[in-house]
Figure 1 (cartoon, rainbow, N blue to C red):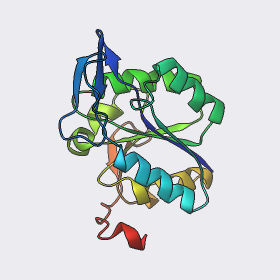
Figure 2: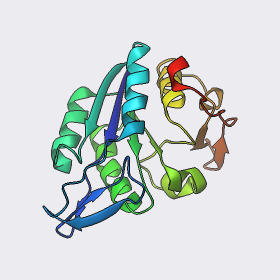
Figure 3: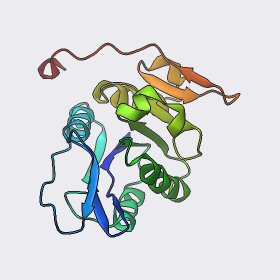
Length: 186
């Protein structure tokens, strides 16, 4: 089982953005903002899956100041079963466009997203062709269980905390996942 966890680079109109690990995802003029928050949820989810034996690639495209094409190439080379990306309301269109490019490069890989916007409005991510799953709430356990379900070809309804489109194209969801009270006990 292979999972790629990514904080996608976010650049548009001569500006760079920050999303993961910050309260207010935003764009600023290139080279004017040295603040780059650590993407805690991306890192926690990647570390949890890795601790359970999943082969993991974790990329912080923003801190690395990577181009989108280089991040997509690294993910393509890794060829994961599951790609998990953090999103935000302000970067969602950009993120979905980038994930669509990734979908074209890796049509067999499943793509999941999480973030406050998709928690409330999962269809905003699911109605395009890029995203297979929205992870609701904390991504650590759900991402790990999802890659296992993919590898074993189990119904996604068996993984708590997911929203997806069913075979008929209607929104479906598994049972909600309880919040993790203490990450140290996972």
